[in-house]
Image 1 (cartoon, helix red, strand yellow):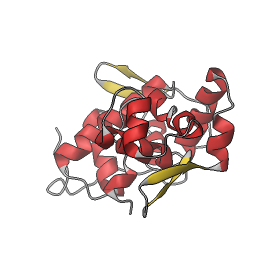
Image 2 (image 1 turned 180 degrees about the vertical axis):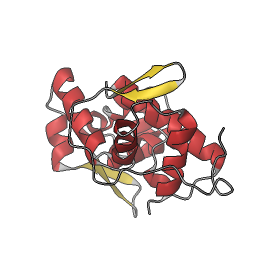
Image 3 (image 1 turned 90 degrees about the vertical axis):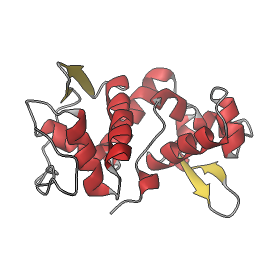
Length: 183
């Protein structure tokens, strides 16, 4: 089970991608990173730092509330935009929670609604309905921005690389009393 901090709430994937750049330029705290990536405050800076941690770009120090680059994050700062896009796609396919969401999308040729994504996130972490819906919006934004999914008729569809399907893709929960109810 993931924690709520493991489900991203930084909506703009390309701003998440700027976190390692900020660190290489001496910005280490949430406030400094928030300012660097676009006049965002300390709270938003923390969201973007957490998102960069989730996809393996940085590590966070709990004692000092500062960040440092992972080996991958350091290499990422040297990539051009096309290579960064390819690297972000690989990371989203590799790490939770996007890994489970992508697996569910790939197993659903009819696509998924945002509430289906929210249900998957609720299976992964203890999220309230409203929080799960907001975080589902973040995840779908990332996947569409990076070219792993697209929207059509209020449903999201996988359009990334053809990979072997996982043995058991995550399924929406059956107990609708605990999770978002749907039609």
